[in-house]
Amino acid sequence: MAIIEKLITLVRGTATDAGQAIVDRNAITILEQEIRDSRSALDQSKVDLTRLMAERKLASDKLDAKKAKVTELSASIQKLVDKGSEQSLALEVAGKVAGLENEIKADEATVKSMDDNIERLRGSIRQAESTVEHLSRQIDTVKATASVQRAQDAIAARTSGSNTKLRTAMDSLSRIQEQQQLKDAQFDAAKQLEDTSGDGDLQARLQAAGVVPSDTAAADVLARFSKPGA
Image 1 (spheres, rainbow, N blue to C red):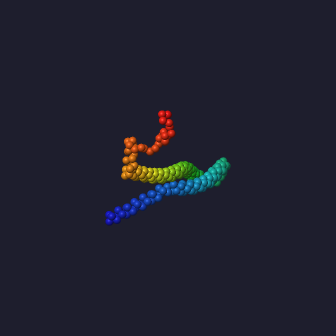
Image 2: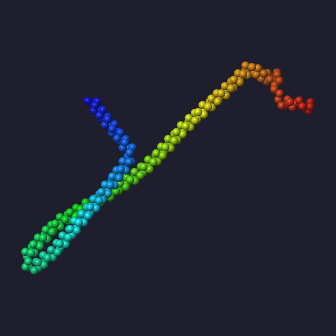
Image 3: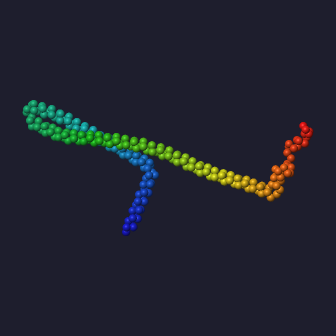
């Protein structure tokens, strides 16, 4: 059972390593797609912000209308109170004003909450845009670096291949030179053997000793044409 668990762990670890290797090889492509996804999310956030701002404007307009209505009704209450004969009507209008004022308090809280949400969403969008732009610049730098490194790898590979070929050529040249030197040595050895086996070596030594005449030289020929005592 323990062996099976270890095998399962091994398979999981191998799969994790293989998956990580795939991710590493495609890191730039993955990052670019993630940035595209982030930009799409940002665009949607801006749409949501626009809708929230529109809703806030509608709520604010309704709030302003209620406040204007309160101002209008308050003026009517004042007139009724001043007349002193329409107390019941004044009380009814006052009840209407009270209801509107309660609604105004609730609407003001709603508008305030919308303002807070709008400001928070704007801040989040600004931060996200900054992050996306920073990542985009970093990816451009990484891609440029990768291009340079690929070029360097290609140059290094060509240089390495050239060096290998040069070393091979030098080795071949050295072998040819060694073979030529060997042949020269064989020719010299054969010549020495030939001289030793015949009269060549003996004749050379006799000529050196002055016992036998040496080969005729140009000076000897010229001496025959010179007058004695000249």
